[in-house]
Image 1 (cartoon, rainbow, N blue to C red):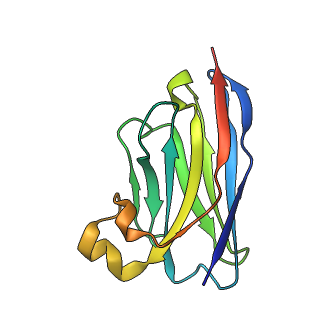
Image 2 (cartoon, rainbow, N blue to C red):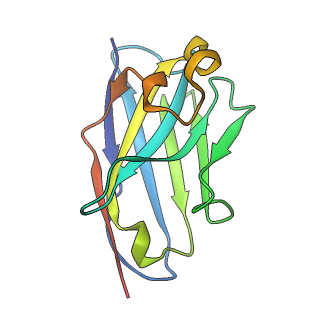
Length: 128
């Protein structure tokens, strides 16, 4: 069992930056693939980015590629989402997720089905 807690959300102007953190507890995240998803107002949850257990592989939604960066610090049991050049359409609740590395081979990194553990979410609001 692993618990995930996101932090770092808030209000930022368009073009600005924000860094989200996802802190794990209960077990190490080092053997787990990690992902970020978001759900905007009136929208379904969508994939944002993911990183493999080793950090060697990353994946990004086309909408955020080049602007967002996922990283992890296993020593701190924490995953980060650096968000730059923010746009109003990035406004959403952002969720951190963790899953067994083996599930990527079944469902893929972009599927919520690959993640069994989810944080409570943190609100990101981008004003324009």
